[in-house]
Image (tube, rainbow, N blue to C red; front, side):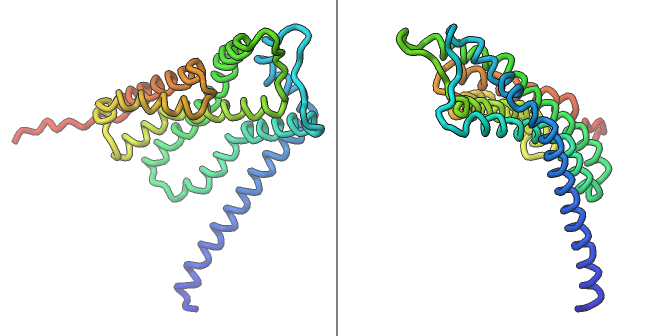
Length: 249
């Protein structure tokens, strides 16, 4: 092996070692938060299930159809919450790994986008919990036959709400995605604005695919998607103003 090949191999090995260290730190952060939250796993589940249990008929409750569900459902929720709470630190580790390879102007743009993406993801989860859940659970618990008692399985409920949390969290990243598309030059703000009608249709298609099959749930996802798209357009025009050439030929 030549000296040049050895010089190229050393940086690669050092990068791999650094990557492993940052991955280990991220896993350790999730584990530490999980150990702190595990004692409160049942309380976390009570909090997450409150939008449904508050609407259940008097004398009814949630049920566990699997003998392991009373343990694994709160366990799974605590693990997911730990991952969510550790996400800023995980993103910090990812940023520290890739930042040395970025230009200064890229760093100036990436830092606010990174922070905004975390805040928007949490905002999407909060919107789902405080706005969407009361509406859709109120609808579902009121339309059933009178002789049917609503008693939801705790594992099924958890899978349902985690799916909606993820859907709304990703949905609230639309302004960031719009900014990145326009900033990278893939498409212009005016071009996206001219396709607004197609965007609205796509929003409702995604709302249909990611939510329960009722118009209320679909609209509660599709309408925020469209509004967030408009926010992304507005911010892109505000931040990325085209340079006007004032020179006269």
